[in-house]
Length: 134
Ligand SMILES: [Fe+2]
Ligand SMILES: [Fe+2]
Image (cartoon, rainbow, N blue to C red; front, top):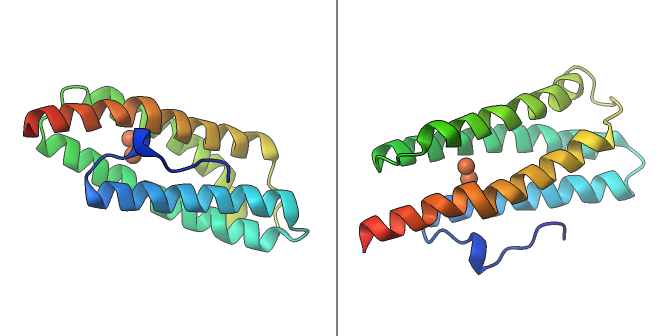
């Protein structure tokens, strides 16, 4: 397990928690395939799935934050866009060739970015939404 689920990263919003868990599962799977598999096929299929799921998640989360009138939405979105560019640069070659060589460096950065984003930027809106609902 690279990223572990815990209280600190639980939003209390069921659909958000479901999506975050799914993303963590895919990232853990990607790292696992990276370390253990000789073939890049499994790695690439997880990467493509991850890319689809995380982009859907960003859309969902941004809409939810807009609905709540979250004041830091602009910065939050900018963070999503930044990582989205990095994800696209890794996924593009994989879309063209299902045996493409995937470099380790950006994968590690993406995993670290997501973990950090969850614990800082996402955790900030969890608190803000909880306060509003209290
Ligand atoms: Fe986010
Ligand atoms: Fe998120």
